[in-house]
Length: 548
Image 1 (cartoon, rainbow, N blue to C red):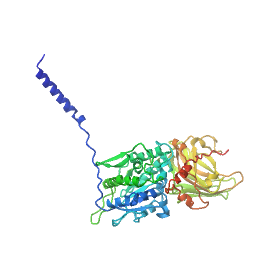
Image 2: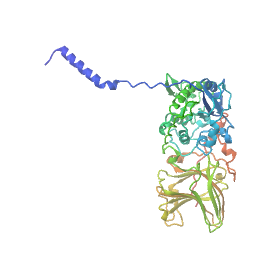
Image 3: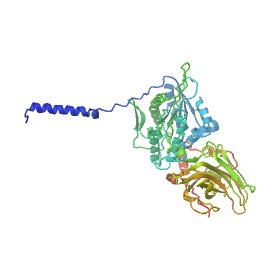
Image 4: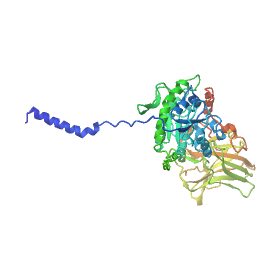
């Protein structure tokens, strides 16, 4: 046995050095995150801001000072407000309205006006000369009533737009597709400011956290032309921030989920608005610098050809409307065709009607069905459709007069041996004054009386070959009127607890909804409107049952 102490020490030292060498990689610290730039652009950039009163206060010199601060950072600022734009679209800035702005047949018209807007609609310093061309940065914000979202904090995206967590997520997933198609524009979402009322504060917190942290990631969004500034969070507590600190982005929330900067109502006060300005403008500088990495912009004079536009990323089907929407009629009613009993005087027409839907177009069906006759507006598919991912169908409808009878028909099986399943609806009173939400489970549909196995429940949601809205009559009585249908989608488990939006009036015979409907929204003029808005959320969900 070797009893030389020095020899033992040397052997232990050598062994220790070997261990150090083998584990060095595990002990190497991760590289520090790359610092982000908060420097202003080196050229004048055109920006337009869509807002109402809170945004106006934020922009105003001596209140939020956003306008003059943006001006000092090389941004040529314009804005919209109430009454702005084609069809006064500036009146409508609630979360569901973003579908109309960015995902409707009117989108090209609205965007042309928005991209070319150069006027001021608020009081703020603008010392820079207009550099010409279109607005590159599009900022948009809903007002504080939009923090009163119904539902639950963790609700997944829904299938239509409304004032719920699920409905709001649906809206932002939907409009993301337009943003992907415009890599030459930077779209900046400003989250809706908080309320002083804590009733829905947890939902507001969860939804805005989703926008900041999960929205783009869940959609695998690859471009740098969409950004979110958490205006909501900044205003909830003096220790809550969304800002750049030491070259790093800091998104820190505190214990409060309600407005910590009240002005006597739910409008943020000067101090809160100025805090938001101090945190936002450096963030915008970073957003713009990052945007330039993938932007497709026109060249400066004499600079040569513009770079190729980045390829828009695909939005996953599971989070986009294509995952569950069967027909929203925003691109027309291709494939829908009217049929009637030609042995009688029955008349039937169906087509997409521009501007008459809940947020865009609807399917309008005009019918004059002779006694004991029929007519249908049907869509037959070239290949069987698998709708088994849904629990049934959900859609919205409105009629010219109550008591109108119509069927919802499903066709299944092979074309040469087609099976018809239906559910009959007698339009209730409120369907003549606004949109009624209709939910039908698969087992609500039964085999038509004129076919074999009459009354058999529908069990072929994986082989649907068509659907229709059919007009029937009571014995020896005609059925005359007009039916509008919108947003036909698969029904998911979460849909059963969704609260519908309040019914809105539609004038009989009008080609567009009444003005009341087209401009529906949550006024941002003062806190007194909020309790009235919440009353609408309490309306119960309509689920009609089959007539006896």
